Image 1: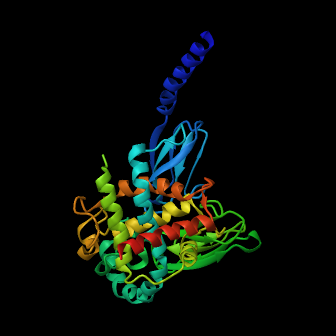
Image 2: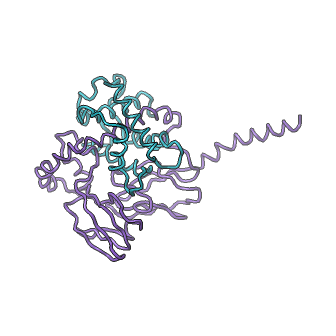
Image 3: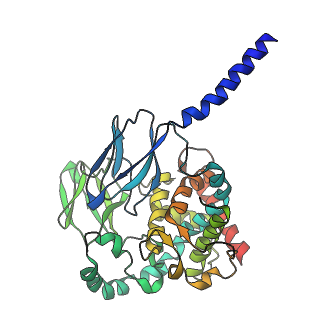
Length: 227
Length: 139
């Protein structure tokens, strides 16, 4: 009798403690503006999880975002909210998120699976690109060029390319770990599209942008995209 | 606060939009669709799609549709005919960046059966199947 009372008491205590622990998680927003490196001081001993991406520019761990013991850093236009502390909590109400998962899931599947149609749009790509590129570029350049430029084909409701297809891709390879430069075709935000080397391509370490060129070294081989 | 109806509306809207924008649905096998997903999204070429690869691709898609860059898809960003047949009468007819972005992990986890943070070939096939089922239920 006494034992079961004790067990019950501890169970109750456990239930009360759980929400308190979860509540220690906090959200930190860290944003790379003007493509510049930013660090956001925070104690990361409880773990870090990217909970909501705020930029169309890529957020890739250990490439354009990361963390060490006392800070989160972002680079190359990555802007995001990070969950610091208890893992597994969500910015959304959990009930809503789970209830909506099935529906949104199918929609998301539809969106990404529609890639098979992209060839059709890509055939039209060069024409629309050439017709609109120069004017739009000159008229809209404001330092947020690549964020705006994605709208280069308004007539098609933006669905050409299905949202974020690169306008150009190009390869750049570091052979024998040596530095190599490759000119960027066109203007825009450059990201790794496919990494072909087993050695890591990490921005600022084994690849980067200098003027109108991408450089790679330390064995980074990749296909890059201009967005 | 995001309501259930808003999310349903947004989801239907996005799903319908994509399907209709591309025209009639080719009779593709799920495995082909999974392959197309890999072709587009598999950044490190390991034959799987990680949550990062999924998130970045999806966010770009949202961004490309958001022509006025206000973080909300609405109005001319969705041709009216995309609404035809979609059960959105009670929805707001728009979807915000936040509504979209916070669901990405939830969606991914739903198809990540073994919870390893990657969608492998079988999980991608299930993903593609779910999409195909959705397409067929609409036609």
